[in-house]
Amino acid sequence: MRRTEDYDVSGVLPENALEELPAGTNVVVTGPSMSGKRRLATRFLAAGLDNGDGVLAVTTDGSLGIDEFERYVEDLDRDRVEILDCSGNDGSSAASGASQRVSTPADLTGISIGMAKQLKTLPTQRLDGLRYGLVTVSTLLQFLDVQTVFKFLHVYTARVDDTDGLGVFTFTGEAHDAQARNTILGQFDAVIRLRETDAGDREVQVRGDGVAPTAWIPFPYGALSAE
Amino acid sequence: MSESDSPVVLIVEDEPAVAEGYELWLEGEYETKRAADGAEALEVVDETVDVVMLDRMMPELSGEQVLAEVRERELDVRVVMVSAVEPDFDVIEMGFDAYITKPPDREELLETIDGLIHRAELDDDLQEYYSLMERKSTLEAQKTEAELAESAEYAELQERIDSARAEADDALGDVGDDQGFVGANRELFGEPESENATLAEDVIDETDAMGGEDEEN
Image (cartoon, rainbow over all chains, first blue to last red; front, top):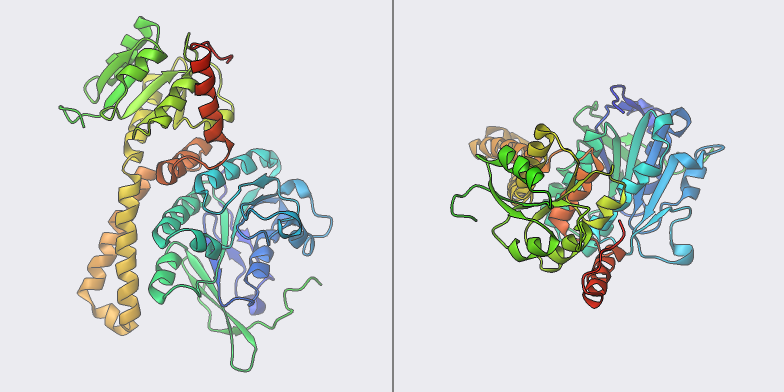
């Protein structure tokens, strides 16, 4: 499947800050914990489900289940969403609706095999595009050193590029110094930053290749809750 | 490395005419070794071999069993499965680095082997790329944007990063392909922790116990 048209992400960010992303783009959502990174990433992934795209998501902490997608997509076609849970969690802390499981985020080869299986399972004949999610890079860094995660992300983002997909990642990075954070961020084409002002309001900023840079834009909490 | 410094390919094939055909295609660029069956392959394979071409259907030891033993020995060698049967997804899980459908054409065979020889450089190339990116991040943390714009060191670093990245991507090969994607991960991060590793060990244990009886294919 070759794709040249952009991935539609309109309506996710306020003030039309980001309308579409070129095929092969890898974008990361970064910001402090509890700033809504996962929810924002899910919206980017879900934005094409009504429009012919499929989703291959990897959850490293079990937090991204099928229920997260059902929030945003009415009558979700579950066949279009493949979830790989590598958290090693059981029961209610595991991702709901995950079809692939890997026992630990440290098993990177196991994750790659699971991702290849996800692609085999998706009805690719019917799909116009593939949106890949990895939520969250931060968990990988709890299990593996920075250079190993850097290498994994290089292969993962190349996979997205070679399949003309859209890659969406989340990354907190609070546990690491600025140097390590920036090295990891260097693997992505575009960076969407979230921050909280002193008054407790949220703002968002977009930077990177293939996107128009923005200033810090107000992005109220609750703007992403299911309408 | 071998004496000639050419990469070494071990051809495991029980039909001499077929093995000779492969040898003709590979000679010049590679040094070749031959084994007529799985048991001989396990005698011949060692650290000097870069790539093993393994026929999946062999009497006595099957391709899977030879692969399992090669992995068990932790040799730094890539294994290509050559099979008349259109390979199923299990080939990826089994741990072969690539597969070639039999009979292969010359182009396909040479491309596959060349890709695997390149992939052996992947970890070193990515390590170099990582180190340069880390240095760039350090500079960025220390200097203002205006200072960076004027820094010759920063400009030179950016050039080195671009060429290191290109080199790493060359070693990476086509990861849009499932086999290429999993193979690259396997090259960098080793065997999966899942049941595959244990399964392979079981096969070998069973074979020893049964005196090398053939597995069904």
